[in-house]
Structures are given as structure tokens and as C-alpha cells.
Image 1 (cartoon, rainbow, N blue to C red):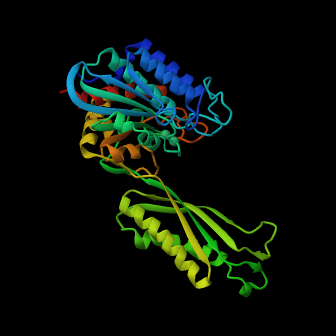
Image 2: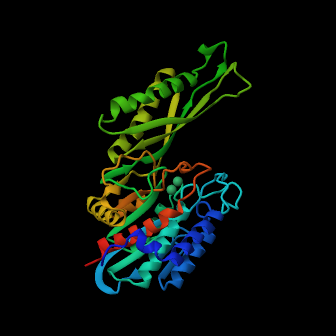
Image 3: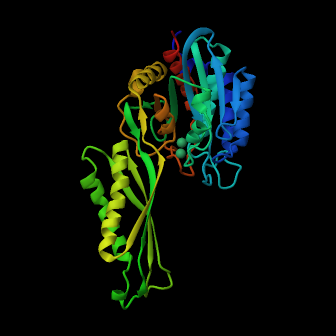
Length: 396
Ligand SMILES: [Zn+2]
Ligand SMILES: [Zn+2]
């Protein structure tokens, strides 16, 4: 089977026009985590119309489509798209801008859903491959871990696969440029909270209070030492404070009895993640103890680090090269300092996550900002990439 190029797909102008309209329709009707009812209906209806077997309900609004190749094969792979939008007020001024106040597709998941539906349509029309493709449309990538919920609902028990692939647009990167890497790619994103509790009192007589503000301040200042002295020097990691809460704004003369410090912890390896959790607790305790103040850590593991498997990255790179040319493929991309719940899928099944440039023109905006818009010129590139992944995986 020769590779599919974006130009092959662009030649089918009706196909590209329909996908562009679909992308803009989803864009105009953004739905946030676990409420992707309309989007999920569109996905399910279209898959069914293509003759693809569908399963609904995993993760609430999740949809899985199953397509068997016309040639015999035992191998099965999954291709995944996310469907959810964000709580942001859109400022693109586009004719198809969000019609829902306070919500918008500011991460391009409208485009991800469209590209995978496009690939499903082409593959269903001529399933010239050996094995099975599972199309996964997942809810709630943004913060609430829809991928994890689909897995807990039995995703990989009901639809066992040998490999799983994910795509995200790369904002402000040259159109169609593919980036990926073997091993850790994106970081674990955890949140933590330390509650310092002691006794407060009159600000003029601090000796009568244990004063949790002092250990809290020492703790915040000590956080940088976790990175510089506990984490191995060749491992990137970040600990940041995002919230400090104590006392009453109207009472600067009263020492509070309780200080809450909240933050985020980012790491790329499970071992480093353990170091961060353990050290944040130990440093808080070490600062609090001499003052007779208690320190309690609540550490919440949210998204694990996203770790790509070597074999699947090789296939993804092969598919990307066939799609955009090897010159536009960077297989040793730098680490990305963000999190992505596709990492839950990669914990269960080997796979590869790639980013494809959304364009770097003057209007290009970063994801999660009010002026971001998925680039429709990326649609044929993404569809071709998906088709070439299937060719690379299931050509036997
Ligand atoms: Zn996002
Ligand atoms: Zn996203």
C-alpha cells in the first residue's frame, strides 16, 4: 500500500470541505469535561454511517469505534482523539466562534476529533489492512482525566490492543512539523497542599503564639532546595506555589493559627515523582517541628508522566515521514513542560504520542488562550498521518 499524502486527500475537495465544516461546527459548540454530549453524538452517528461498529458509555461520553481490516491479522491498534473544550471566553472573532458563553475549543480538540473521524471514514471505505483498528474518542482530557476513567470503565479489557497512538496539535510550530521522542516526553502534573497548624494570637505578642506563618515562609523558600539537592542533577523537575492562604485581610495585627500553601509538582520519571512527594512532606515537617507547629501534606497524583515506547515511536516516525517528509519530522524533540492524560493509556499499552505543528503565522496563538484556533490546513495532514500509522502497523 503506498503512503497517503496530504495532497492525495486535498484532491478530494468534497471530503476536505465536509471535514472543515465539521471542525467549525464542533468549534462553535464547545463542550467541557464529561459533558461532550453533542460532540459524542456527532462522532457516534458518523462512525455508524461509515459502517463502523460503535460502543458508547465508557467515561460517560466516550465513544469507541471498531474497524476490522479486509485482510486477516491478529494485531490490533488504537488511535485516540480527545473531544473536550475549556472554560475560556473566545476572542478569535471567527464566524464560527464559540456560541457557548465562557467555553471554547482553545486546545484544538475540535480538530483532533475531526482528523480521527476523517481517517475513520477513509479507512472504512477501503479497509486495506490486516488486523483491527479501535478509534477512541475520549472525554475530559483537560484536568479531569477522561482517559483514566475510560480505562477504569474497561476500555482495554473490552478492546484489547497491542499499541496505542495519540496526536496533539503543536501551537506556534510550523504547519505539519511532527515532533516526538522515545521515553519520557511530557511531565507528571501533580497538585499538593501543606496545612501548617499552630496557635495564633496578638501580633504585638508573638511569643504567646507558635505562629505557623514563619515555618510556612521557610518552607516556601526551601522548595528550591528540593530541586537542587534531592532531585538528580540530570532530571528536570519543577515545584511551584500557586496559592497561599492565611489570616484575615482586615486583621494585619492578628497572627493566624493556620496557613495553607498549595502548589504543583512536575516530573518526568516515576522515581523523581516519588522524591518530590516525599521531600515536600519532609521539608514541611522539618520547618514546622522546631516551632511546635504541625504540617500535614495532601499530595494528589493527577497525570502520570507521558512515556513513549521505542518501537511505536519508530512506526510513528515512519508514518510521519511518509506524510510530511522526513525533513519535517523531529524524532528527538525536547521535553514538553505540560501534562496530558494520554499518559494513562501509555501506562497500560505501549504507544507513541506525537505533536504536529498548527502553523507559525502572525495570527498563531498558544493553546489555552482566547485567540487560539485549530488550523484547518492541518486536517489533511492529520488524516494522512493516521492512515499511515495504520499502514505502518497493520500492513502484514
Ligand atoms: Zn489543553
Ligand atoms: Zn489539548
